[in-house]
Image (tube, rainbow, N blue to C red; front, side, top):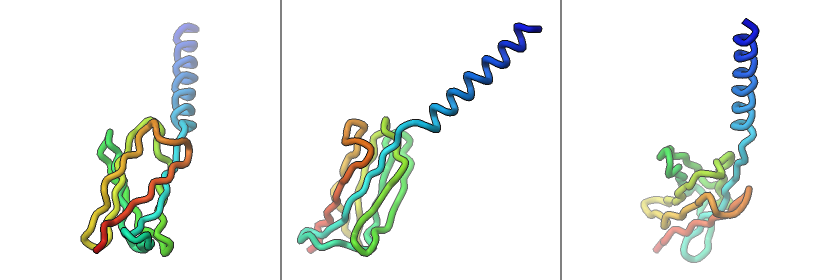
Length: 113
């Protein structure tokens, strides 16, 4: 009986430690500016981020200064970023697990005419 109680207590402690480790896992932020080929900012551009592992997609509409932000990104996952303005797309950019630190800047350029 004592062994069973000890096992339950140990299992609970192990599960709690694992949950805490997941909650405290390091994350990073990616931010940038979307511009046209002349360097003009593009407010209202659509920025897409794709998790290359799960294929989950997130999006952001740029602010009046052309900036976008994605927070709480896993540091051990690669992401693909690209932007769209009207019907034109930027080149895809890779944010890999080896890029930068806690805050990474990736500017995107739309090849406007």
